[in-house]
Amino acid sequence: MLREVWPFLDAHRRAGRPVALARLVARDGPGSRPLGSTMAVAADGTWRGSVSGGCVEAVVVEAARAVLAGAAPHLLPVTPGELLLPWEDAPACSATMEVLVLPAPPPPVHEAITMALQRDRSLAVSVGLQPPYRWSVAPTADRLPSDRPAYVEELPRRRRLVLAGATDLAAVVATLAESLDRAVSVVDPRPGHVGSGALPASARVVRAWPDEWLTGHPLGAGDAVVALSHDPRIDDRAIRAALAGGAGHVAALGSRATHAQRLQRLAGTPGLDRLAGPAGLDLGGTSLAEGALSILAEVVAAGNGRNGGRLRDSRLPIGVHAATMAHS
Image 1 (cartoon, one colour):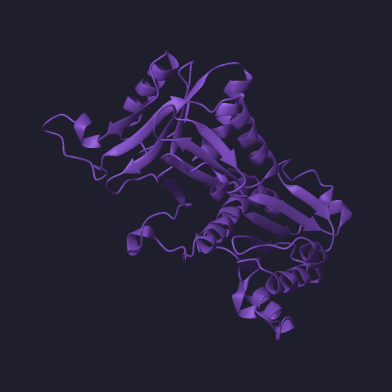
Image 2 (tube, rainbow, N blue to C red):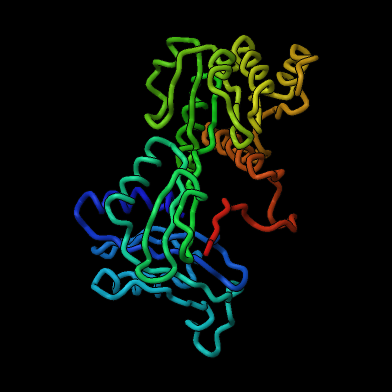
């Protein structure tokens, strides 16, 4: 996806180094990466991203470097099995892929995407599937040009993760959540906690009672609230407000005994059956990092409508991906 490779692409563009993109725009069977998966290849030979998870990246990098050297942009058909020696078994991901290889978007489109990502605003990005492979952007997909076949990716706002309590665990959760592209807000009324300096710069740190802050900052079904303060005066207010709002996942840290006491205090609260407690998946970890991973694993699973069990025990498709589309 564009969001995954954009920091790399933007850094090279601002340094004056050209970049080519390879985008998976069609496939005639199953594969390890979703449509829209993107590789960014710079003129110095470095690259980021993938279109197949490893099967055909060498061929795609070669094609992208050719475009950087002056070859025409083109749709590249690639089949992983074609790259094998006769005696080698075909890979499971043997579908033919259509990969669009072309220069990175021109400056107006580049800046529009950069600003949308920086300001966390939705944006629809279109690239033509026929020469001259023109790029265009619009606030929503229905406002894009529709006079020729194109591949459209909608860049949504990031999912929100609100952490009630500026604790040491919250700092680790916020740091890990950055790599998951979550917009993290840490809310705590205690000045000493919000001013500890432990929280990453990527997190929004707010000194406020979480219920008051949540009332003024409504959340959506893809968002999550996790109470981490270990202080019932803070956690209970955050839970009540989160359950009354639109957050899709609401969780609270604590032992089973602590959670049982919490449920007694909150008895009669509308939506209390939605509360996930103790927060996290059963990973068996004890360190802060393992606890943060457990909490975030549950956030991701809940956001994708999954229970977080082992893949070996599931028959559901592996991975849930944001929708992309082609139109003509």
